[in-house]
Image (cartoon, rainbow, N blue to C red; front, side):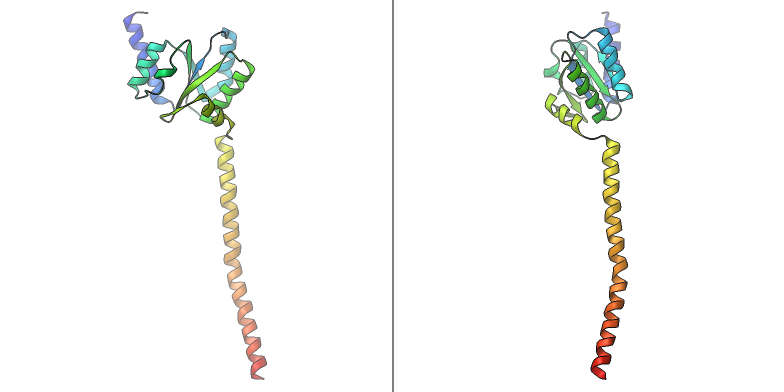
Length: 174
């Protein structure tokens, strides 16, 4: 690879690291080109799957301020640069790795935090962002309904109390 090509590849990888919310490193040894294509399709718009030389990846990651990947860059390494939902991308990688055991998740970085393969698998077990937001909205709506019922009950209870007090005074005054 010519020096100009290497510097261009490093610049492109650095841009990918800087523009991604997460990067997951995998070992792809033994996978066919068709299987890699299938993986790229399964990731959809959530991630870009790229194969790059370890030394160039290390230089680009360090240039982007990510040093946590240095120990993972051994052997054939491919990177999933996550642009969309991190959970969905992790699910795609996990599911593909289950179907194709030759794909091994080495680890990665999510929002600047280093993650082990186990943590990435746990991340894949989470529900999607949309589902979590829907559950939060439902919980907030339930709390608002409870508060509205409480506030509506206050004047009614006050009126009943006033009526009971008036009736008691009438009985005592008769």
